Length: 212
Ligand SMILES: C[S@@+](CC[C@H](N)C(=O)[O-])C[C@H]1O[C@@H](n2cnc3c(N)ncnc32)[C@H](O)[C@@H]1O
Image 1 (tube, rainbow, N blue to C red):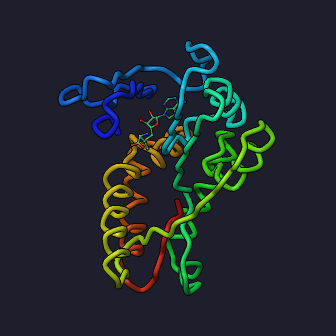
Image 2: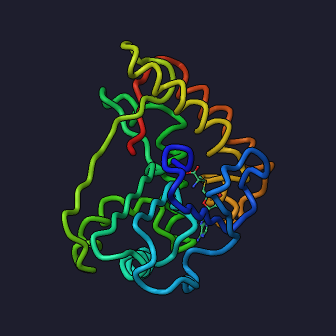
């Protein structure tokens, strides 16, 4: 985005120092901060606010959206993408699989325990409308998981989803790992659970997908 719009000033925020240090375009700066803290910028500052994959790190979504609304200029745009920590399937076989429902039930129990909404998407349009955002649009995409996609478009998505769920999201340091950590799981407990879960996902017997 920075390269496409060199005239724009872009600020990236994360609570951890995950940002690249080299090869950053000159119109980008990064800040380490919790987005739930009061933003240090005056109201009506930004043309565009983008948030991606924050679920698990936000306690009060409406309060965050209220800040977004206030900091956006009139006519500004807010875009948000979340992948729900949930798995669906086309054939109903998923519910009969051994590990998968157990894994999701553990996740649901942990959501309650840590009192955090890991799947805000269904509520987001209502929250935004209540805050006075106009022209609210929600789009949902199927992202195949495992080993069943047929056409090229779905195969490309499947490759990316397998990569991010395995390598980026479902290690103990990230996303669903974050949930397990907050719920008091040790690395040994988590590592013992995951191989059987992934074996079932990749077996080809079921056609699971996640949703963005
Ligand atoms: C799954 S990663 C997504 C990273 C990046 N947003 C992206 O889409 O590529 C989730 C990131 O959100 C950050 N995060 C979660 N809660 C946050 C919060 N309240 N304030 C700032 N960053 C937060 C985490 O530190 C983590 O780096």
